[in-house]
Image (cartoon, rainbow, N blue to C red; front, side, top):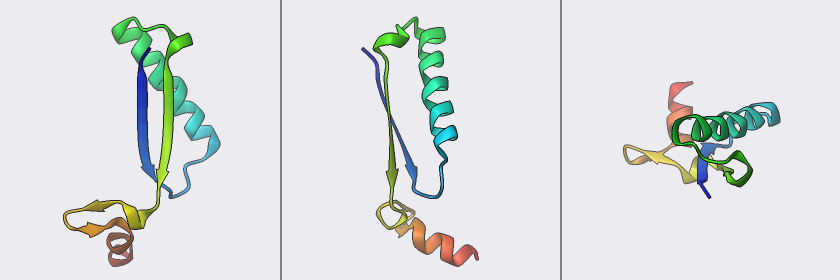
Length: 67
């Protein structure tokens, strides 16, 4: 049973986009690895930008700097 965990920042991913990710990842595992879609689990976690960092700083700070 494949288990896929997708993590994204909580910056407005819509329910339709999440559904497309779940469907797309499930289809990809079926097509590439022959995995059964009925037993494929996909979890999407939305992470606050204060809790996600790149190059030593939070995404919140990076976004503020980019404005």
